[in-house]
Length: 478
Image 1 (cartoon, helix red, strand yellow):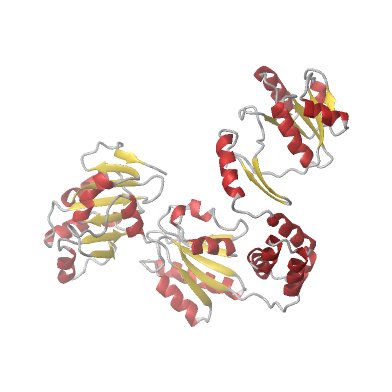
Image 2 (cartoon, rainbow, N blue to C red; image 1 turned 120 degrees about the vertical axis):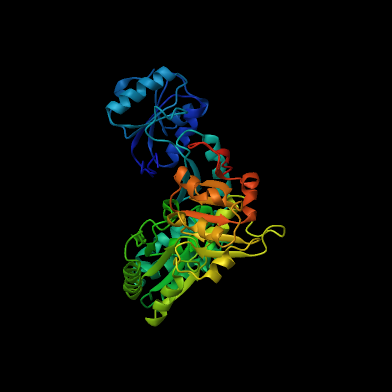
């Protein structure tokens, strides 16, 4: 985050705008709307600015820029058409530690004026850090269509009744649920119909109901393999309602950034080599502890909780301790990583079945199991397979799988640094080591993976013959 978002209270505070043209005029109008005391410094100003000056709305200093103008002001905007002048003003502002916006010059600026969606007192600001104001404007246009103008009236109504809301709903979670009800229920509906009295009465009636303490619950949420765009709407809703988030090690930071800012986030991921049963016991304890304290707990798992995610064990524990729970499915790694690598998991010409398994199974797997895994015309998806690549291909070939069988090894599937290595089964161990593939990686084996070099549309594609550090067919159409 290059810029820290900030809403400034300028009411009654002096702000200087240097420049008197049309751009300066637009800045002045926005500043006046916020209640600022505006001074415009410029030998010449637009007719509208002149009119504002004559009515006493702004102060006009009809001179070229003077350094003493920077005394006793809170904020500064340089809107002249002379970059040397703007650079001089910016240098003086930096010396005095004044925040300055130099119009159309983000390098000289210490703050940017965002595009605004105004639903006062609700304000939505969009910034491109000054680099692409036209794109910021386009985003604002889209957001404008999402929020009815009655939203500002709803915020003002909530503000008037805030003391009563806090008194009636001391429990934080109940209070959040009430505000959700305000936005989604009859109060907002009445305001959209321009019925403010009915809206206020509905709010008062709801506050008079008995509201007991919130009961805790746990929601198992599948986060998918990493791309935040693959979250379901229910998963996003759970992240925004959670009091506590217990997340796995491989859940991406981009996904965790979508959660409520004040939610407590606790990493409970299992680390290779540690006692996973002990870690699972700690997860159970944390779920129980926070749910019994009346909190909304999200157990956030990579992929899907029910595909090699111990989700069943966690539900059994919650049920045995009479803790309410829900499940939000996630897109499992085999589906998502294969799709991002352009690999159909089934294909009527190449694979009539799909098997999901983990490469970390016992080396004592029966001969019958190995023979079944080695059959042709099926797709094998091995989760957590990187550490087993030294022996897994050999076992499959020893039990009848052809050395020429295609494979695809997908590292960091669906993420910005996704890589896909493809080649023949007999080359897998050597080439994975040669290219330095690490966890998290998903291994796909079967005839369908031969389609990867032709159909992959995302990330870097490596063949077994690719020189180290290079890729072919790299595309990231995001």
